[in-house]
Image: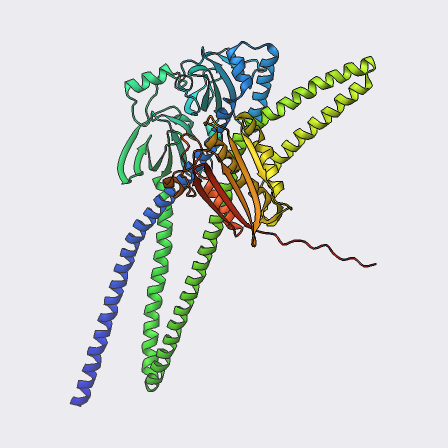
Length: 621
């Protein structure tokens, strides 16, 4: 009886210990749930603010990019000779109509609000809305900063509300200069509200100018208000420029509650708490901000925490149920305990090994995808750089080619008029001769335009058999006017037979245009004979193209870096990508490029794989 009583007491003691452990685990689980809720709140809050920052950064980049797309318009218009001449002398009505018509067509195509030209007195003399009853022509804007601070070759940026139509816009301007004298300014006005995109539901975007005034928002009551009162000098300067609709800029009821990080604050605006994320856009000198109501943010976080807590509670309850069930199974199947432990140990080992192998396989797949994505991104970046460099070359050539085409066009006009007179008086032979000359000139213009179109279009980068002499001729068709302009000679040293190489013809022409253009730049300042020569020949399995000039040569310190990206010796010209891109193009076809400097000038040597000869097919009857 005593032994039985001791055994029963021992079992009761063990049962109490198990109950205590169970309650301890339950309390630990509840504490874990509370800690999980607190930790989840902090993590989710940080995650939500990070998402706001990321989305705002994307919006800022898109806005900057969209505005930058218009930047080249006033720059290119500042080189329009017809507008420059019209600003020098008061043009006739026909010239004004022509300029206004061209500005209207350009404004319609690029989607700008307006394009107009201001003379040196500050009066608008040409405008895309010349035909409108409330046209800008005749208005004086000399008080605008985009007129006062414009510099040659530099596009100025400025935001203001239009004084004629009371329509806000972002102005980009460039100047017309004759020497140091400012003749006038060309201005492109863009609706900045059309460029703000991707506003998330429940959020508000505000755009503040450099003075801190809200110039774009979905909340109309906030428009042309400041977050904090403007200093008196800032307000006086804005009124002097007629920048806003009103001379008084009221401030909102704004209070910064706390700073979350460098760009994120919790703020109070007009009775509502917001999470405000800011991003300064240096390119346009503005600040873009996103306001997300705190209540909406907390609601989203609460939903996530509730779901996470429910899942955690379910897991805890499941663990307790499984623990009780395992105890019962353990008591009933005590004799199989050793076998089960061995089996479970083996199963766990297999599972762990399987998980390790699966994790390694997944890591390899991720690494492979990242490698492929990186290679694709690099390839796309290289293609974009090639395209940008090609557009830069086309921009440099366009003025000269326009002059090269205008001369034959003038001759065609004269000869066509003469042919009409010859036909009228019966001089048919003379008329025929004039028409034949016109045909040759048209053919000449066609070859130039076809080559420029071929040079500018996007190619498929296919490798083909390319006739070296043809590529040189095509490059010279684009550069011939530069040799005439600088009284330079171009000397060919062709081989005894046609040579073909394996590459892309348009890419090879781009490389030749770049190197020959650099050679022209090197010799144009010297007073002795200016000469660029090209020699091509086959050497083993390679076709060698050597381009030499009789310029001053290249210092050794420059040769060491000449093919590096963004390295250039030309002040205020180019990005230093031409030779770097040329080297990448040649190497992509299995070739090489080198440069050497001699006393008589510089010499660039291109090596490309020679194309195999195509044997004629034997045809038997």
